[in-house]
Length: 118
Image 1 (cartoon, helix red, strand yellow):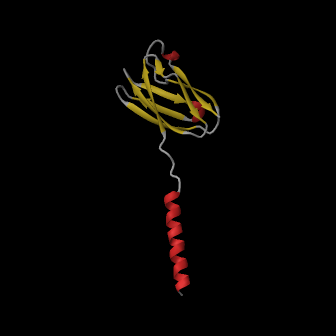
Image 2 (image 1 turned 120 degrees about the vertical axis):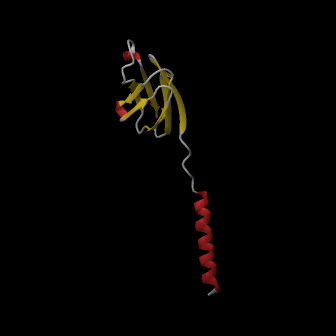
Image 3 (image 1 turned 180 degrees about the vertical axis):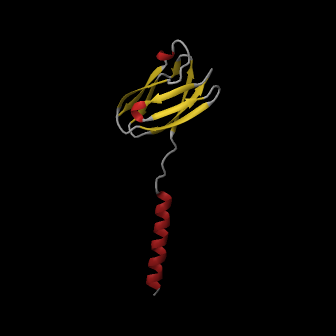
């Protein structure tokens, strides 16, 4: 009986210790970006394939949009405000993004590239 009790206690201790050692997912890396007539800064963003990141987009002047169609991402960036967009790219490559809210002459030049490295 003592052996069974010792086995149960030991098993429970190992189970609890294993839970404490389990690796928790690290918090996502935050990449701060600004949007203003007629540019994003930075215009080129590098992440690693499978990396979970948050793009923190702040508008310095007016309402802008952020569209990254190949990854199915779309957000409004309010004037003087911030939008947070979570990204986990599952394939490597170059993915263009653009402002999709008309912000005046030069709007068509408000573009950038998300580069996902293998």
